[in-house]
Length: 493
Image (cartoon, rainbow, N blue to C red; front, top):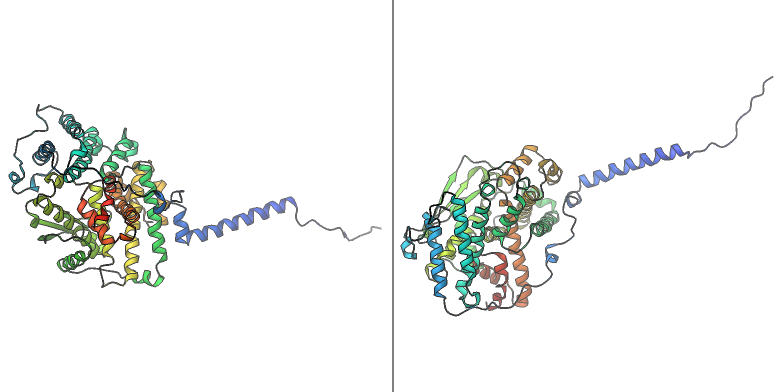
């Protein structure tokens, strides 16, 4: 006879195997929740792809700008005037650049065809001859006693120095400067060294590429924080945002607005032309064609219809190319030159970082000039525009200096809404084909903001934006380190 019985002993609920399964399950759920939070919260998602530095633009350089006045002579040094005249002749008459059309009557400025030559020995290696010529010019420049030069001459000196450095870099690395390679600069022999010099010659702020990269990341974050702070209602209205209109009417309005915030300038005549066969992504929406020095009325703006229509922002495009951007700054400089207040050579040695930074600053200000658009919607457009400019600069540096491939950058771009792989490829091809070009626009503007911040420190209660605008306009197109040492002048206004 068998006996049955009921097992009344307690079974273990948390066996080692069950604990492991539970841990794996909870970890999986946590990862899914974290992914969902990050993926659908733009500010968190974006911040993960920015540099690890927590610096903001305000803390990048906590020191105030140097307030020590620059020592200069009250009289012009005639030897230096002879030097700038020689350089002017070389730049205008040589084939190193297309400057010939920038004077209607060059003889008025002491320019004579064949008076000087960059290649007197007709050397077979033209690049080597040019390199020698520009190196000799830089050595000659260094022989002048800076403090013995007049204020006008010192400004020309500083601008010339960066211009000569640009030519020396160009002819030291001819294969790189002429883009006789494929891929990014970082993969080329001497590519990183060339990129370092390219950026510094173009911007002139005395920073390393790492420092430019760090500053751009800080501003990128600031722009998108600004975007996140705009209302959802304004973001919805932005979908139908457009500042299209008649270019001439827009430019007239911008001229009037500029008069309230910038120094007076001669009223230059201009023409508007259209280009209809260019693309819309990563191309110039418009181009300002610099007129001859002695005929500012031959200014010209060429609008790329496809890019303008895509941007929906003709008003700010014309602020960049027209008033108070390129057309304004060139008109102001040419007027000063023709009055004898600036050296003519400055028209041909303009610093790219300044010219694009100034024009981008004008574009930034113009978002508040357009009273036909609600201010909140204008803010959305402004933060989008300059936020994406900072993104393009970041990709420029990461591809050409840090050597990142497009596949390593796709996740970052997708996080900012650039998800189409073809568009991503187009951006990568743009920055590797034109290394440094995207950085000049974004960092040029950021350096203007840095100068503005330091000017506020110097002027204190005496500061105003209009005084700052006058200061950077009058200093003209020089490197930002050279602008910084003259910021003390804001207290003279």
